[in-house]
Length: 421
Image 1 (cartoon, rainbow, N blue to C red):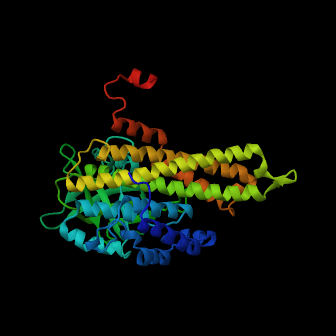
Image 2 (image 1 turned 90 degrees about the vertical axis):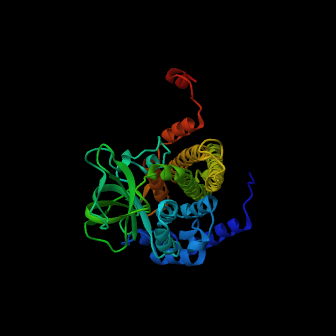
Image 3 (image 1 turned 120 degrees about the horizontal axis):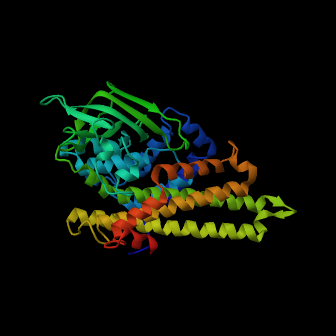
């Protein structure tokens, strides 16, 4: 592994950081989350036009930049530093790769260029489970999260020969689902006994039978929505052969690396702000940062953030290796560079990053004193991001347990032996 970033990767980071410093200050952030879209649409268009951010990992012949998980992780680290509300994760991390992996040639040709240009944002509706569960990061991949029983989730039926599909059901928490132009919905088709999980496309402009409700979220910078479907017209993504759980599992390593890098960026910036505060906040006639106890607490946080950053970078690199290997057919699902090994690395990285962000945010509030929890101060935004991410993408112990399972750490051992060791 070459740990040095390329010149292109360094330029992506520098350019994005400079742009966000100019366009995503505290006041702009607060104004953006209160808009209908939940993000600054003008800034999103600028990020698409100048940096090609939505199409960062889309192939060049579809109008994308043609990069991979490492570049996406670097971008997420910078957006995480400023808590940028944007459809980057949902669009570039989830929807675009699934369209590329499962869509027909006509669907890829139609949708990917519009996603890469920033014209079309996307959201993935997973009805009955958290995102990390569907991606196989907290348990074995399967299709039960799309419906799983006689009722619940989202169910699909064919409307007739050549007449498409109809969807019924509800997805309770969809990231950026309230205004996404393109919705990918996981649904169960084929009945209770022989049912299978498929992905369906709700095209831009389709409103009949679709109700979107923006939810009140703990973290305003990560909008969520409830999607209700009542006889909604949809097109099947790809073929009816299935393979959706497996496609999501292959995507797990890349998405976990993005989330880990984003959490690291937020933790790093929260720590920077805390260090700035303790240098100027005085008690007993001297800055509180000069007290040894405060220095030790900050030093521990710094080590935790740097370790989480290294783990996130490695996870992104491993995800890229796994993706390259699967494309040329040179690697199996197991092994250090297979899908299983990359998912294990990414799960551990995400667990470490979530814990680092939680620790930094909690200490930041403590060291800021009472001002840290006031609505007007920015540090409370990082605390809310930490709490929200822990609920949405954790818990860390389940991520680590699944990584241990993928790595085969407890293979061939009894439950008592695995616990006591």
